[in-house]
Length: 132
Image (tube, rainbow, N blue to C red; front, side, top):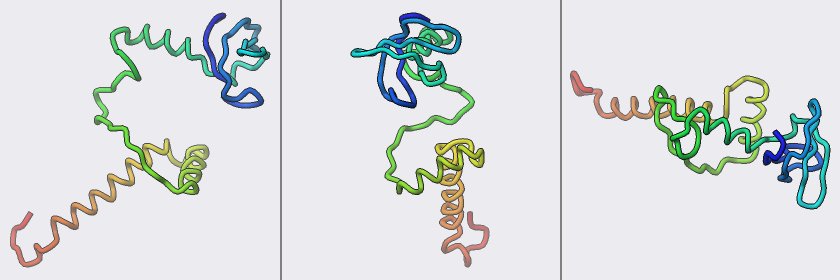
């Protein structure tokens, strides 16, 4: 929509923020602070459209995505991963091998924690009849 705030996702203008000046088919004229360009819609992320959708779907939710009550609560954390590991996870997502980096890490950590707790519960219980 004319006047919407956008950011360019890829290409020569990647990272630049601007305002939609005109739309014709799949091409959009974007006004940047010092210039303008005609770009395909696919290269743009429309912040204004996302905000309009959020207001329509959840007008009383202050920020972020709507919480899905069926999903377990999450906590934002920061991990320092080797660059190669991060890149390989990205490739796996692109190939459809894993759904997302987050989902894979959560699943793998859950599996390892289950083994860890199972080992911990059984540790020292060899002589204990009817232990946990």
